[in-house]
Length: 476
Image (tube, rainbow, N blue to C red; front, side, top):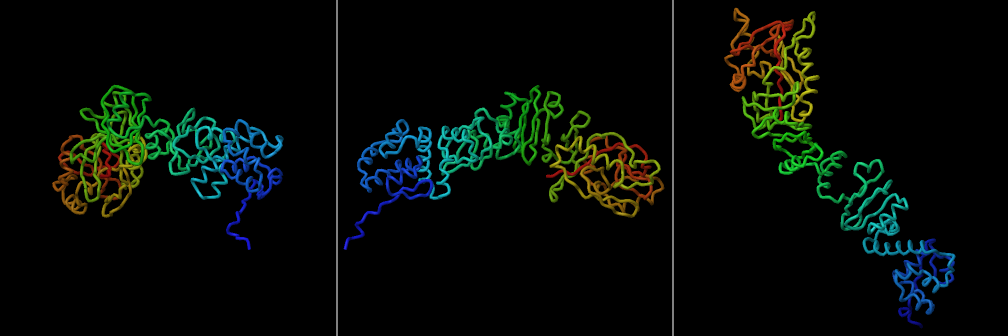
């Protein structure tokens, strides 16, 4: 019996239509250039011919290269006696390209679905340009660097392989990607700083101006010197811009507002020099102690100054009050309204609506929404506010003790000897905190309390116009 172990298995060539061809006439009948060229490049075609005793054809193709076939495809197909009307040079060139790609893809993966899509792989810029021209909807990028031109549209670029591909932009901006329907998957833009900017924001305006993003103070001051666009984006905790007379807008980027300090100058000097601040905290307020002043927000064209009244490390917050009055107001809005509640007061509405949105909205991430306690006659009420005026609670006074002391007096005034030491320290530093409204009331009709000089509290009609000193709690 013949030894089957010594028998050579003759493999077929699988054509695009799925036919497994075993004879030369079948190869001609089911001809497709890509399958034949792929077998040739793998070295299988010559073996296939020899196994079937087509020695003459095998000898003709053994010493051919892919470049030979690109320039003279007839050398291959004449050897196989395939008529010239079945192929053309462009088809052959594409077939060689796909076959070469398939060989490369097979070395990278065993995934049959990816191998089947070898014609959608780009290994260099020439491949990428060719696929853009064919309108391919998604392209696998295999390599380190590619150039994206303005011919790209309606395409998804997918990084494939061990190296994450990078894109250089040529004649196209990142903010055009959405309009052109270009998406990236495991692909990065080439410039290192651009990667970093894209990792912190999705704002296309910032990304397209990534060279104007400062991550530290040295970079900020270099950009100030260059002053190319007039707009500098800041990502970081603290910055101290150099003082120059230039029209420059500093814009905070990211979730945390960058804190701006001013060295030997103040915010007012920088504003007059031409600086503007957006989404920034223009004071390192957290470092300030009780009685110290910092700037936050702009009111009537001038930086607004605040005094630290109290710092509470346990609750991670600090109480501050405006150093100067923002003007005088009546406590209750209408003359015929007998209502002295803080919740319905004209002051509360103004501070938390118009004043907050115009002066402090850019610093909103640092301002706490606080549950306040307000006393009205014998009732204790609560409200939730960002901006408010001081009440007895913030002054460190017990309302019911205060009420008892107040009612035992013959006059309408009481000296607050037991006021919080921190509050006294803060308020005594500036003589402006006189005759201002505080939130609480001793009756439930129309009178409210005011804080006068020498820390005296008196009762007055809520229709009187008194200076308003906004207060708020800030995060520590």
